[in-house]
Amino acid sequence: MIEISRYAVGKALRALGRSAEAIPLLETAVAWADGEGAPDGWFHEELAEEYANVGRDQEAAEQAGAAIPLLERDDPDFAGDPERSTRLRALAEPGESESLT
Image 1: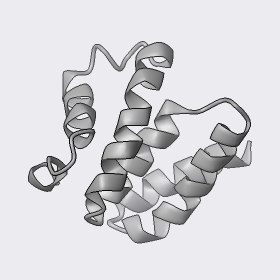
Image 2: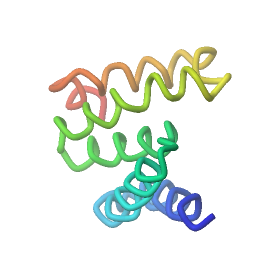
Image 3: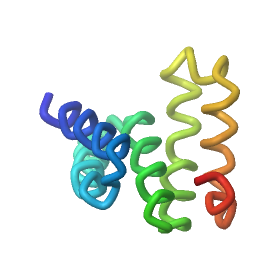
Image 4: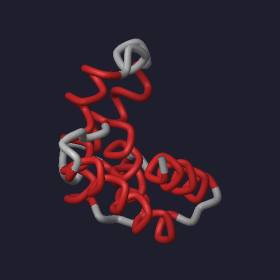
């Protein structure tokens, strides 16, 4: 699936410090999944991280808020990863991501 490729490239770009380049790829992936009626928590989570990296805190909060229930439902590792779940929950609170980046 091409959207998983967009997600993977976006994640790699963030690792390279190139979040601004990753955002359009991830926005496309999120829009596709949501449009198909199959929202993807991993896509929302990564987009939240990218938005936080470029200082788009409100958008990061919206994406993190969308990601949390999806990941709780679909990712058995999410609940058992306190660093990841704490980070995402903090991003879901507008204004919190500045202290986390």
